[in-house]
Length: 236
Image: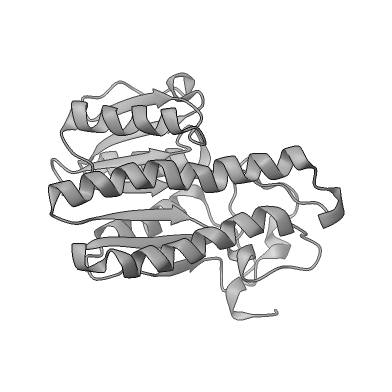
């Protein structure tokens, strides 16, 4: 159990994010959960849970989240960058507005909160971790599932995870990512089993379990852990 440790979780109102929140609360972490309307997500009040409404792609939201963690629980020990948006369409059909939205949520949403967390982790001097949600599609495109523009941002998450793992290794701040395949959430629709080599579909808790593992695996850093039924190994 991790009594006294505080984890920030973005995109926490439903699906994978809500499963991650529940998993950490069950393991006695203090949790700061955020999304645009997290206060309406139906969470049961708990002394170990703080909720912050706001767009994580805005610097002021990240500042409020970090402030809440420190003032409410006294530390930031881990961050889970789960917030992300996705849509599938041919490359030529993505609009400028969609591009800006992908960059804001998927990249700005990573940078702003992670910068604040790293500053706090360095000041605390006892290490910690940042675990981000990437996507198996970023390094294993699937015919019939065009998603080039959102995967450009998810590939960026993979790249910065490796860079930061190297940059902060001596400070014992670990950076990892989970790359889900098809997950049964509101983001994915249709005959999902046909997109999985094993013919099965992951649930939000499967991704949450991987996030918890990486958060607590003290000697794992720079890892992109695929939870995708083997989709990343090649054609099936």
